[in-house]
Amino acid sequence: MRAPSATTVREAGEAWVAGAREGTVRNRSGDRYKPSVIRGYEASLRRRILPDFGARRLSDVRRSDVQDLADRLLAEGLDPSSVRNALMPLRVLFRRAVSRGEVAVNPCERLQLPAVRGRRERIASPAEAARLIAAVPARDRAIWAAALYGGLRRGELMALRWDDVDLEASVIRVERSWDPKERSDVGTKSRGGRRRVPMAASLRRHLLEHRLLAGSAEGFVFGRTPSLPFDYSSTRARAIRSWRLAGLEPIGLHECRHTYASLMIAAGVNAKALSTYMGHASIAITLDRYGHLMPGNESEAAKLLDAFLARSEDAAPIEHATT
Image 1 (cartoon, rainbow, N blue to C red):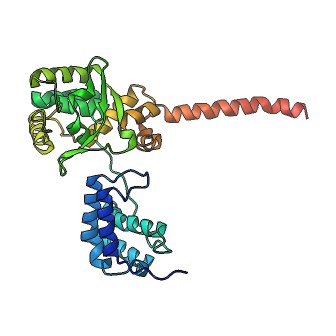
Image 2 (tube, rainbow, N blue to C red):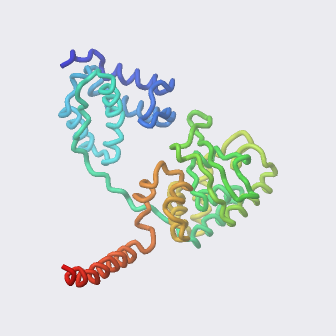
Image 3 (tube, rainbow, N blue to C red):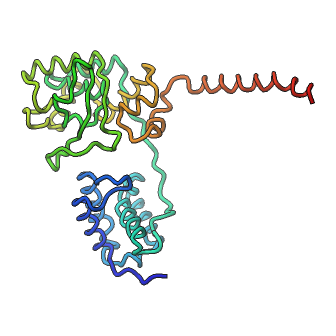
């Protein structure tokens, strides 16, 4: 038994935000929280959590209270993913409070939350990917080529410097990401985010042409200037206009990553290598997201089972004869 905590949810939230910004409060991997994560949690606290729980002591919040909030958010029209995201900062606050001995029970555990159903992501075929790149303005082609043929995330594309591009070795070194709000470099999404991405001949050709067009091999690869990254909104707007004029279905950078994964799988790249090139924190993420695309899953599994059963059937008479 312990005395009830006098700390309110608002005070705990303010302390968490301040600590996360200073780097004294870290995520479960021991890494600093990214500025975008802190901003997202702070917004969710302000909009969804503090109106209901801000003045309440941490020790006074019950699981039924959190469940009621989740049910109400769903009834208000939030989709299941948004409901879970809205509760995430509260879960982080109570996980920290439990570890510090400020409360004995985490009221965010064992909640009944709506299931999140993943939507089917758009994946471009090899021929379509080439047409999408060719249709955009010349200055933007290398950006979309690096997304479709290199799988780089938006922040990684924005932060990419020419020093990170080894055209002789045909390798891109992903070292950092870019946060538009902070207007500065930040770490990659995970520890696995720092990686070396092999450069296909098509991507290398586009980067060579881009360097000739830019007239410089210093600073940002895709920047408006060597010291200023490209603006994604205007880049995408130009691309959409071009694709519509060409009769092509627009694609987003996140869907370009899915396309890259599908192309690599179709080319025969194994899951472990793909996980590394994608910058996933673990191979489990790669298998969960793209395992269904890997060729021969069903037929290979059936053949393995048939071979096992055949061996078992062959061995059975011999075992019977010797007993």
